[in-house]
Image (cartoon, rainbow, N blue to C red):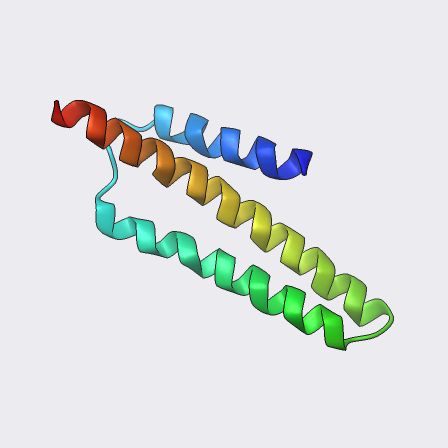
Length: 85
């Protein structure tokens, strides 16, 4: 859980380093690692042994990437709302 919170915070920090806000259309790319994480987690339930551990690790890495992108685009969305005023 700490890794996911840290990933979210790093996603927000990554947005702070950008010169301009990303276009809203790029936010759909945040779903790609989420879908990979879900498919790896579901696949790990059916596997056994070492392969299951590898699938669980892949699911965790993809989850971290999805949460980091979520933090990035959440901060971009909030900044866009704030700048619209």
